[in-house]
Length: 396
Image (cartoon, rainbow, N blue to C red; front, side, top):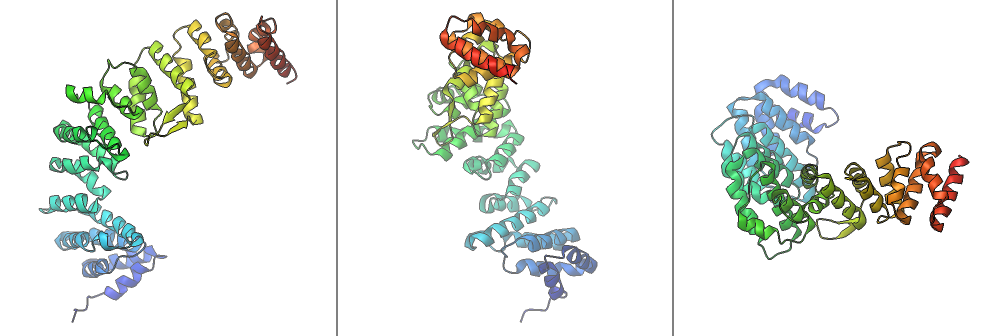
């Protein structure tokens, strides 16, 4: 016969009343240490589909402090394996166990390494990933590197590996060589290799020559971009970095933007122009999509700030579609009177049409010189567009 645990019924009732958590907190705290066995008994019950009550029990147990409460928290971490639970309950109990580990890592006790190891390998808790960095547990680095192909934990694992410092570079390189040389074209493997490279790049680590050579032959734009972060002599490096800056992966995009900003204007402009002409990018799975409006706008803005020479800009306008060319000219002119007109002599007919479109957005006073030249242009299409846009401005 199980012994009766003092206050167990009251604690269950208070915690299960999710609408009144303040009552539960005040009532259980008033019991003091007498509530500890009852809280342990509550956590020993079957997991629930929502985590709030059990997480509150964890917090109240942790507040009690002392070896007894710590031991009960450790028991709760190992109790109720997640694998055998239905999805709704598993997700709820995952949150509870993450809360338990959060409380445990606030303390130093002999079994802490074993608990974090279990939480990392078996439960795959985010709190365990962060604890590795906090407690400098370098021995668990291989587990973290393996998590770089986990869509949920990859970001936290990468940050922790960066925090552990160059001592773990050997482990990262070992996994990296296996991933990049794998015969599989699996997207997860490619992403894991990219994240491993970003971990190394973030702290300025170097790659072995053999690995650099192999990476140079990979075809996916994201892998070309991350390789360009290391190889400053790579052909078409600027274009690879710009394409990386357009990636859906935030860490890759930010690293590529930082590296790209250090390039000479001429290289940056040509790479940006090539990306605008392409007007599409490849996602993580190798599928091609048109540029989103925000990415297209970023390219136009960056190109307008990287123009090496006036004639270079003017000549590029005719290569772009009319709207993009007009946006580029407009950003470059920044409302300066006569600026658009100064491009006229260098532009081909398509470029001159784009300048007229840009002048329309500037207003008549600012775009006057450009529109006037269009009215007397030798090309009939240019004259026709200039008349239409000029009349539109006049009737505004």
